[in-house]
Amino acid sequence: MSVPRPRWLLLDGSDAPQASAALADTFAHVSRSWLFEGTELHALREQGPTLVDLDDCPVLAERAHQEPRIWRGLLLYSEASTAQLLAHLRRMLTVSVGLHHRALLSYYSPYTASYFFDACDARELSRWLGPVRQLSWFGGTWADRAIGFEGWQQLSNPGLVTGPLAIQECLSQGQLDKLQTCLLEQHAWQWSETTGTDYERLWSHLQEGLALGFSERAVLDEWLWLRLQYPAYTPASTLPGLTPREHLECLRYLWKNNKP
Image 1: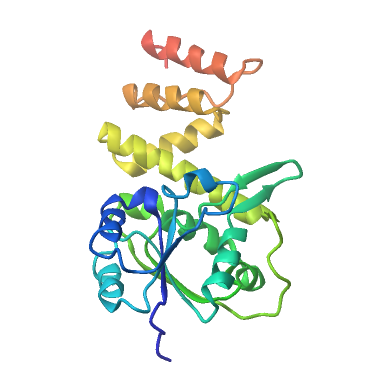
Image 2: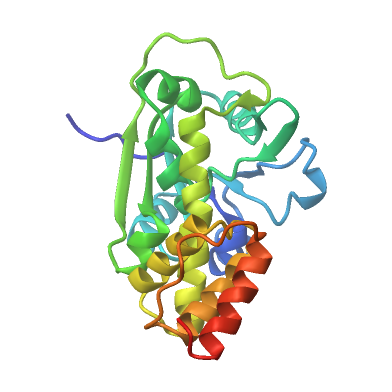
């Protein structure tokens, strides 16, 4: 079966400054809509994602395929009207996390998409994609980026009959777990880039820190720095009666005084 040509580009403006500049200049005539417009994020509309109509500009559609690292975002195929598509995409933005918390779901980021949609089963995917028949993007997970394994990803809407996406749809535990992995792998990638340390080694240290109870970001970061300074040492798995901060300080004292 042939793959339909995408009709829309949902450009992640925060991660595509060169493409945003080209939209304002070379492709100023192309129809586009700010995704945040009319939402509670309206004040950030010009810095947020932009839904770009590719139907009347095959040159731009070709550029998006040939230069995916510049035109970062999602390519969409949908037979819905602009208004119908925007309504659905805007509904996807705000989600419920548990009973008392709301969050922005940055599904328009190729990195977030690589985790989030992978956590959806066929019924969930049908609900989340709604009027979008096909979705594609260039990228992968943060771990993929670290090892140079990014590529084109593609999803087709299973088309199962489901109810419409709820206002502030509640995320499943599987989706929450995937998004948490996204944040952790991004953090490991940032540390790897900043320190010049192999990503796999950094990820191993991060997992080790979490297993020791260093889940608070500041404590986890101090643990990573300490671990890089003393790569040959192995921490005690448990130190009863200590808070994570006390545990970390104890390890720091022992390692600095050559008592691993």
